[in-house]
Structure formats: structure tokens, C-alpha cells
Length: 155
Image (cartoon, rainbow, N blue to C red; front, side, top):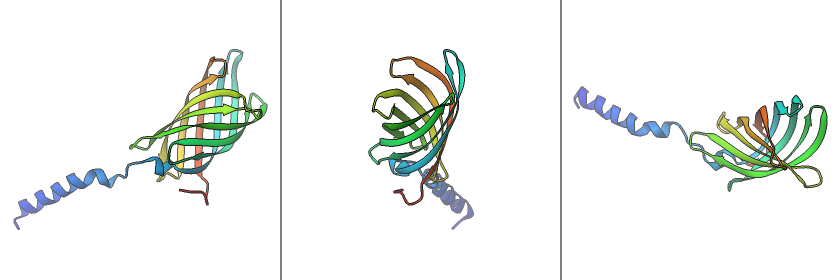
């Protein structure tokens, strides 16, 4: 085989194989349970307040989300539950629409959280896009999320 043909064959192979060299993410990449930490600031009408939360969240193959968290907003502590839907894009970016409820089951807020699956789906890095209270009031925020897959849960 002539060298030019060899190089063309190799080039064609790499061109066709290129897209498959980078695995695309699917809902299966995210499915499982993650432990997470949320930190940052909420911008309330009275001024900025610190936020911290830790919890567990589970993503199902069909996009359903469930979880719980313990959070502190400006020093006020609460136990909360989370439901919602997760969208996973081929480029491993994600969008979570999260409904957060108090311990009595009342809707407290709805948030849109955008992020990215990293480390082959073992970790998530995310930021809150919106925080909307149950009464419709939108709050400004600078909240980030760091999540790690919990060992022993479905992957």
C-alpha cells in the first residue's frame, strides 16, 4: 500500500472514530445516589445571607429525582425533602428542576440548577440558576453544589 493511501486510511478512521472517542452522557450516566453540599449566598430583600446544606439526592433513569437535605439559611436550620426532574444532555451538562418541601410537606421553593457531570459521572458540579419561593417571589443567589456518587448505590 502506498504511504499516501495509508495516511488517508488512518485519517478517515480517525475522522469516523472521533465522535465515539468521547463518550456521550445519558440518563444512565447520572442514575444513582449522590451526597451533596450546597454553599453560597441568597440575596433576600433584607440583604445577603449565607446558605449551607448537605443531603442525599437520587436520580432515576426516567429523570425523576428524590432526596432530602439539612440546610441553614442565615442561621435558621430546617430539614427538607426534594422532588423534581433531571435532564441530562449528551455533552454531560445537566439541568435539575427541584421542588423543595418543608417537614410538613409544604412547598417552600422551586429552583433550577444547572451543572455538569464530571469524572465519568461520579461527581457533579452545579450552580443555582433560579430560586423561586412558593409565593412566586424570585430571589437572587450565588449558590454552588458539589456532589459525589455514594458508593454502593446504583450507577
